[in-house]
Length: 414
Length: 146
Image (cartoon, rainbow over the protein chains, first blue to last red):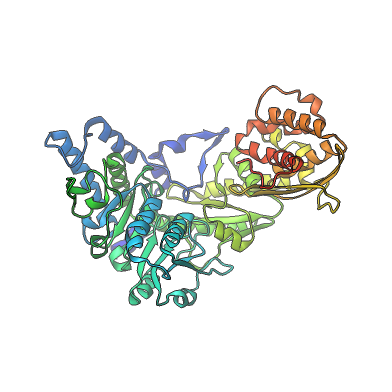
């Protein structure tokens, strides 16, 4: 009820934009139209100030000091962890491991959980949609363990067939890893269904949530997954910090990932003992400033309401899809029925590189290339797409500017 | 940033209508160029007769800059000796990397001079040239400028 009421109150985008210092910039004499949010999002002043404020007044090393600053820093760090817990509705803060980002989170699962559980002849299921960060760690694990990757196919719309996924969940499958939302195509997977099917078969689930958490509410308990990974810098936070959510029962059984200080209770040459969860998986001095940043980003998103952001972005997606349909020779890549707020496309006779350069000259930031999803490009038989990805501060005017600039590029080059 | 400096008429023309496109059955030398991160790919067939680049052809899929550069290269070195081609390569390389170069002496290749103002695109322009070097040197591995 409250959520529906929230969504009904439209976003005051102009006011929100005023909170993002970088949006004041002019690029090549034009206002910046930042349409590359899937690559990384911009930070509001609230986040920047929180991080700077930490460095100005509260920094010290965490967990080990009795002095005041150390206690303040520890409280801020653990306070951020609790914010993350609430953000994804994890059952306990012991299930929230701070890492560098989604890539590190998945590598942690592969090397700690995977090395202990995956043996020769076992199988790991991924989809063709995956970002390289949810492919390569499994390839490395498979090579180490003597296991095989099985790949769920996609169709020409960029959707993943659920039946095809089910068909690949076999008696040797140990792990199913998939993206909640595809970074290259915007496809939204029915993650709860995918997780349930794997759980029924005793298969561990690893969900790449990097492209999901900025755009939709995520409840890891409702999803039922074993692991959920995401990055701060995709959700209006700073770079260098991300989260691995791991169900406590699973995390408790995992061998340590990195060794060092903080992840131990005692160290002696006769043997060392490990710290409790989640600290066992956080060796060394953490990125405390980053944790403060992700905490501030969570507060910021909470102050707006993720449902209102989702509604705004759905409008942008609809508008962009309609306007791009009018561009001669433009073909959308990624037309699944359920999509997040990005558009990937090709333009006949004009290479994405050239498009990107022309757009940049008009102040428009998009991404051109394979988007760290080479298997997706290979499926569509193209070297690259141009991708415009929308965030809470983007506007229809920016989409209009994109379409105008595309017209200019086509006129210049085709 | 002046886009017309990058996409000069000569560049646009050579991208739209690349010269010397295709394969060369009589090729004596061959090399491939590949910039996987940006998606520019190139196959170069060269027919060397003694010291002379008698003929060459290229197949490519890539951006306007890489295509135009390959096309301009093919016109510039056809009928030249290895040494002359090497000199032209040196001059083009200096021009692309912003070192002092006698741009006027390069004729149509001077159209590539604008690329140095767009550092992200230098590798696009230089791919064909490095591929030619590899072909003449008889190298086996695909060339990349990334």
